[in-house]
Length: 153
Image (cartoon, rainbow, N blue to C red; front, side):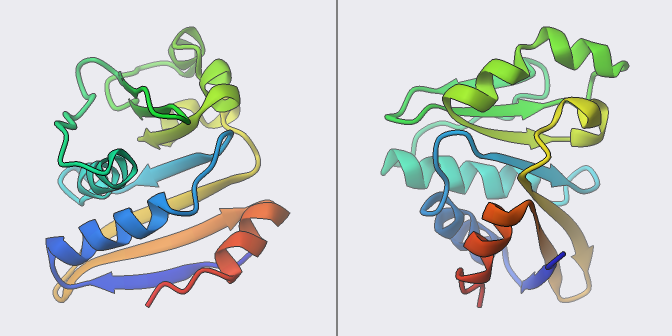
């Protein structure tokens, strides 16, 4: 499996990367984001959603709501599973429906691992002395091919 590390020395570069990712997403895509609290998961998602909106819209963290939905031509679902204690709780959120009708962006995906599509893009974000290190890991043939053609520098 291909893993692509990208170093983002500033928050602006993380935002730019999120905006670029917005260009390649399509209906049915699932992107998972893993990283410590404050690593930059919501920053990357916020810039992605704003890029799809074409405007600086309000993009709150769904930590308490669990899901924030954005009604674009292709809906985007921003899901934060941090507060879930049991993977069965994720089932009740209706994730399967989201996977079919829109683009699903999931923070803390380990809380629902068995419910996630096998074909997805996994993103891991961690802090380094030089900034954030973002690792893209495409799962499945389609994601592998799509990301192989996407320049990340």
